[in-house]
Image (cartoon, rainbow, N blue to C red; front, side):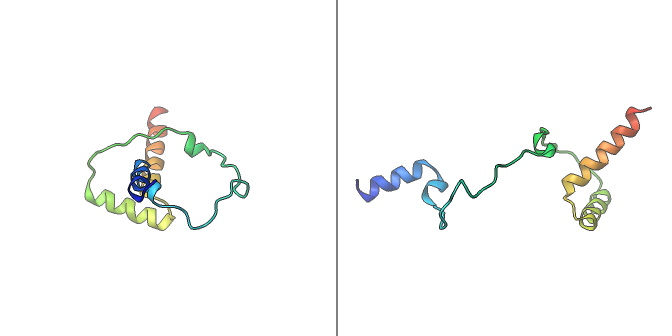
Length: 87
């Protein structure tokens, strides 16, 4: 098989087909991944507008708590819903 055909075959797998790992991979060395509760939960992408001041305050809170902005929003929404569902 010529170089041209090898290149075409490699390109069928996308970028991963062209790049290969420099370290040998061993499946025996890696522990089995256990799905956490967070991974089991389905996620939905939401696009909405919020006030810039609220966004800035949430970003600083996320930095202070060493959390992601997504985690801050999820936590805040859960607390809000818990409070209002009880009413």
